[in-house]
Image 1 (cartoon, rainbow, N blue to C red):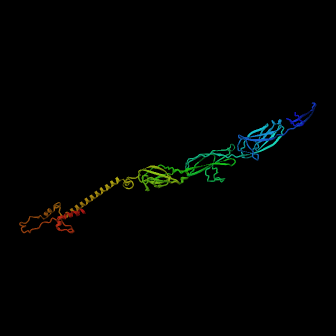
Image 2 (tube, helix red, strand yellow):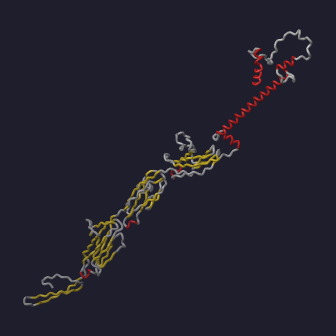
Image 3 (cartoon, rainbow, N blue to C red):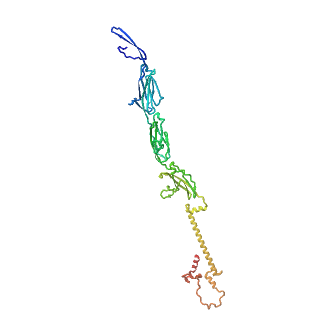
Length: 480
């Protein structure tokens, strides 16, 4: 006991307890007195709550509020005071989140301790009540927890090499967040940040494609921008931007098989030429129908625009092999697509006379045939001229014969002039005896040919006529 006149004590247990006081004097005389005191139950009291993490206790702000982040795991520890015999029988009842009224945690003993995290941002109220074995309660102890939202994290998008018009590209976005927000993230692609397609918010937050994966293509050349953005349950949006270069690719020229004969209408078809969808209606197709000929005179043989159109009709004038170059371009004529095809044009279907005419005239004219024809014509003309001359000569002879027949008798035909003259001057009867005695001398006999009906030619004399008259007559016969 205590050696004092005043004693302060307590009972370790509830109920009646007897306390005895003993007085002793200097002679060791002793007097005793006792008192019975009833001790009643005391309520749990002196509650305290602490919050800790791996770094140690978390401080309270001036408003007695803790600050944590979504899904941050902390350790809550509660403690209360009570009588010694009740300490081990205390019951701790926790309501750690008023947003989750059904979440209740109960512990027995002097101390309660557990891990806790809050999945939603905002201000959360936490409560603790401690009761003893007799049901006495400490009352509710409250504290506030401010939970901050953790924004999503979007990984940078991988760069893409330049694409061709119409070429598909596959892009994959990668975003992370706290476990409680991960499944609720809204993952979107805005494929045209310049257009507000949903009329909500800005132009760069449209959800044109939902999900982490984007498979897309662009039909127009240029630099195109895509945005991958992620939004959590608190409306916080995080994004990554990627610029993609799309190049204009020349059309791919495709033609149908060509099988034609010369001088007939031939169909040249390039309607199967392909390009990006936006460029198909803008394609211009040009045909150089013979790359061996520079038809436009620019010094380049294989760039002539002989015909224009995806499907044309053309007539080849002669058979043979032709090299045709087909050029097609869209909005960029400086980068045309080309295709070179070799075509065999068959012989035209025509008669022998048409073949002969084609060999002598036109594009298919054969110099050998032309020279042969010229030689034949010259020979024919020579023969006709010779025959004509022969005919004229024959007619002149016949005319001369008729003239001779009129002048000479049958017996005189073929005789020389002097013979004819001698024959005609020959006397019919023998001369009379001494008939020449009285004859007068006669001058020389003329050998000149007979004069023409018109008389002597102009400027001629009889002496000239005797010597050259026959030649003049012969020349007149040849000229006739």
